[in-house]
Image (cartoon, rainbow, N blue to C red; front, side, top):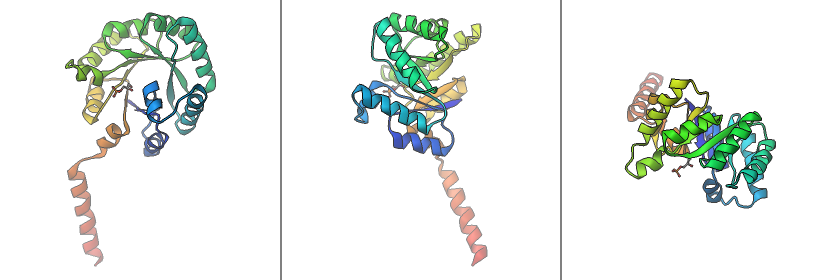
Length: 218
Ligand code: G3P
């Protein structure tokens, strides 16, 4: 399973990249605003800075909600860097734009997906990635992981090439369960990646090994 980090924080992106397990980055307007990145020029420069840190795909979201606006913005974003994936909202205009971009060989990520029917539409329109938001479903007492399994079944039935990018991942158990289901990608905060390192038996075992080694050196 590919690991994407869901942040616009350059320090966190660098930290995940240095760990050696980062496959890409997802951002959205809220994550940009959280880092104080506002205004078209600053946002564009920030995408370029992210692309310089990571080797993989970097999702950059359009703001327009009409077809023409999405095409104009998406083409400009895609021209910024070969790693840019145009992120489109799961609305009718977004699906039309997805079809347009896939026809041109430009990768897209259809976001704000909350049902397998929406995922199916995005796959039929040629999306490179579809982003079901599992944490936000859990927030409203709906099983987000069930949606990931359902989309996996639908995509497997027809061998769609669209990758399932499990988004709104909040913690390590989301990551592990996405991997068990066979999600192609997960995107979550740095804590959801670094949290996978932790086990008290690892820490205790290492402390014991070092203590025993040092006994021999005294
Ligand atoms: O990748 C989608 C993500 O940015 C939403 O995450 O935690 O705000 O639901 P969250």
